Amino acid sequence: MENWKKNKAQNPYSVPANYFADMQKNVQLRMREDSAVELTVDLMHNKAYPTPSSDYFDQLHKKVHAKLNTQVSENQDLIPNMPYEKPQGYTPRFKSKNNNYPLYKNSKFNALVMAATFLLLVLIGGSYIQSNQSLKVEPSSLDYMYEIDEAEWANFLENEESIRLDGASDDPEVNLKGVSEQELKDYLKEEQYLELF
Amino acid sequence: MTNEEVKLVEGLKANPNDSKLMAQLMTYYQEPLYWHIRRMVVSHDDADDVLQNTFVKAWKGIKNFRMEAALKTWLYRIATNEALTFLSKKKKRPSIPLGGVDYDLTDVIQSQQGYDPERAEWLLQEAMQKLPEKQRIVFNLRYYDEMPYDEMSQILDTSAGALKASYHHAVKKVEQYLKDNAQE
Image 1 (cartoon, one colour):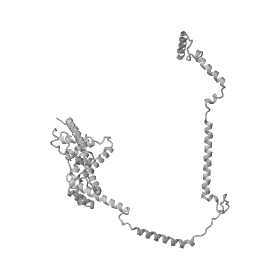
Image 2 (cartoon, chains in turn yellow, cyan):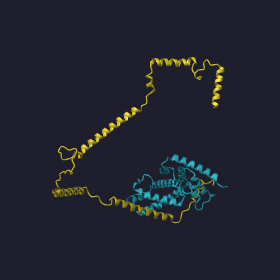
Image 3 (tube, rainbow over the protein chains, first blue to last red):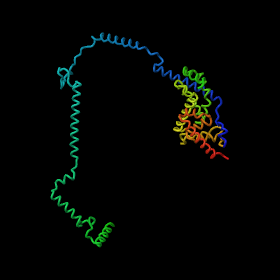
């Protein structure tokens, strides 16, 4: 076991008898199948046929044009001269200048009408959204401040400050100035008592 | 490339459907390529599939073979890529779908005819399957085929120095596996 590097280990796998001959046959078969597929693909793409020269196509175009021109000249008399006929009982609302052709059948006119309608809808929609948004805006608290008289506001601020400085607030947590130790204990007891409920 | 190889390649380029030339090419390289593939995929049926694909691809690609590398190196490169593609497909689609077991080549080795866990050659095959992919290929080519590092470098697109390091690591791991698993 230790000498596996010096004494090369043999290949332990076995191969069926005549395997390589069979394998060669299979490969040749696959090559033939692939060639047949390629030939079919070539035929499908017309690669197997020789491509005609460019002269051939020029001649073909000329022949086709000549044939078409002959047919048009032969059939020209057969095409009737049919003016536009108005449907019975219908009076078109819009009329073109020559008064024969209804304006609503004019594609330029239709496009103009559609563009104007679209513009109108956009304008209506835009103004609606704008007005709706302005309604939704809530008044700011600052708006109310402007209504307070300046003297009143100064008085309010003065009172606020005095509350904080002299401890005259009703809320004991705001300022404890001037509260005795006993009063504080009584207050805390009362708080605890209230918390039980 | 030898003169014989050049003639063979030029002949196949000129007439790809020449079955005699193709048979000649297969006869030259079928055995070394088969064993290279077999040691990678283990099962004979799988090796047969991969070898056939290798020759069909070589036949299709021979018109683009520029003869810059040796024919043998080019064929080994196709065979290695085919075997790796085959293994990655097999791992994605396990052959035992209901068992929920991953495709493990060690199991395939143990199911081979004549498997004997006490024999070094079988243990060596098992040890090889424990190696990372690249190290396994390098070990396979160097230990069994005794391929020079320069030639190997052309097949695997890796520098000779890196291949030497890979082989060194592979040998150490194989040694350790044999020590751990050899029965006294």
